[in-house]
Length: 269
Image (tube, rainbow, N blue to C red):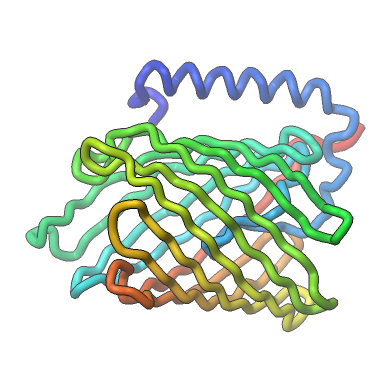
């Protein structure tokens, strides 16, 4: 996949990897201090996690999604996000291109891979008020199929947060700004989300989420999302979610399944 990138994307990727190596060398004595903490994933909610993966940890988040919109069904796989902790509050992020399969290509849709995304997460919390907050800048690269790719370098900035209400209840949300390329111009889009999570058992959670996206050009997109996650081990997670649109600009429904796992590559010396 790297061979298909423009030279500027390759330069960006190589510079990030070089910086990662230097950062890990500098942090070798402290990396692995939080290796036993339970896995915390960005999926399957729209809201990303407000905390980073532990330093020296490599986390894979994967899934499959079925979406229905106006009688058209689309399958999206593998939904793989790779997160690598390079410091106590910093991680690198890489989202692999998803493959989109449409059941009726005669309707004008096509099959193929989407764009890949590079970014990082910087954890800013916890604050004195008990809020965890992170900043996530990222950019998607135009590596996808001709009729699926945006054909632009599209930046996104996200600010996820979370706060424990009680022992078993947590509230979380995220504010986002996106600049997706649509044709010959960018459509500035603001998005906000909030969800409530209930811990049913120590390894089992359920949640409900609302998300609203408000593009500069086009109709608002409102979504309600329900889901549950189960951790068979501290470093593995299974998840299921179901969402439906509350406005005409959103798909009628989506159903997704996922599996995430974390490995500790660097242990504390």
